[in-house]
Length: 134
Image (cartoon, rainbow, N blue to C red; front, side):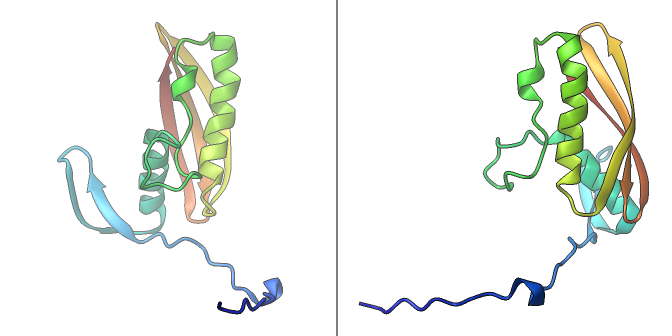
């Protein structure tokens, strides 16, 4: 039997790391990944990918990654708008490079709601939007 040794970790001595922003450049129009991108352009990609990934669906992603939108389908618009705002904020603020998500505006069209907003990051501002079918 192997003895168990308890070790105390001094939390004050641990170093907090920020997620790196250097990543592969995704060209959605050409459907290719080529080259690298960093800082604000990388954040545009990160915001887009987070908003396109349904949280908890893919085992490859951590449970803090993505946004929960599937259960909003078929719901009343008066419920969808505040929930959409809350869920977008929750999804994006999970990334420690995002400092705030503000300036929300909502547009209701036949069968959908679109949220437009500004994402403030440590590298600058990113404008984004996400549409949900209702």
